[in-house]
Image 1 (cartoon, rainbow, N blue to C red):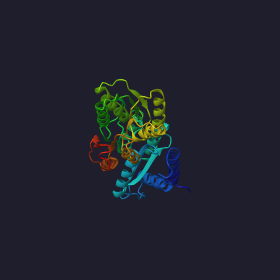
Image 2: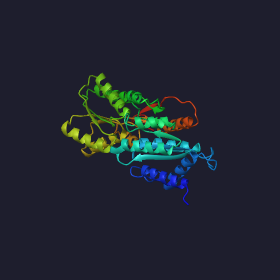
Image 3: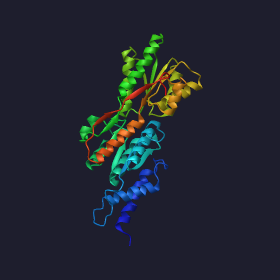
Image 4: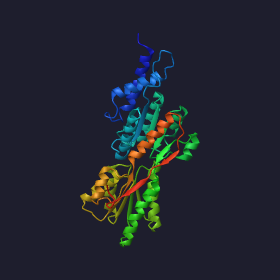
Length: 344
């Protein structure tokens, strides 16, 4: 006779296979990991006396990222995985193959993690507003969750009764303001007219808006009000295509301010193809390829976010929540401006 427990396991496996296929990289989580996650969560919630699962069982933390290939988020994930391993927690991660489907994918992922009753979640939101209903459900289910990088809109959160969720972040607006103002000051001192193009990250995310606003503030401070802004969706391909389009229309553009390194690298690739060397390009994140571009003086500045520290703080925060400890609502991580003078 088939036991009810086995039926439950089969149903839960169907849920998890739908979660970790489609938008998930198969290398990220194996069938064995999924089975272990399911077994553990079903046993944990089985209250009869025959249940042998105890507090000695490893708890599971799931990292929910954005699109595959995002180097910044991948570095955070690696740090989270290390801390989980060091502290005796199971670790799983999920990311979406198609960047245009990130938010829908995250909603489905979070709903299924809610059903599975995982022990803790670390989320890099794809939207500051659209995830709020499912986050509210997770909060009501008392599943510990920590948010990294992209803030949840506080006004929308209040409408749904969503309480504050611990948030690991940087001061995006100030960091973008600082590097933009530095390059503008340099250009003005060299008597170069500044003709900017801003290629922002996905503007449904608060961090993208904050970086865009920081750049615009620096430009406006220097009397520059004619500013081209395009949403590059964080993608290297968008950095390339937007640069190509704008330089075809406005060849006098000489400053490209990008919301992340990937878009900046896309812009640089097009500039190299047309052998245009008089355009200054700004990135953000200081990923490995960006560091090389700074060394070659192809990228003027990038901003280093300490991915390892962000992952470490996020992991320790969700572990504290799992263990019923008090945590801070907002934890700011320091940034560093990287240029050819301080590269390391």
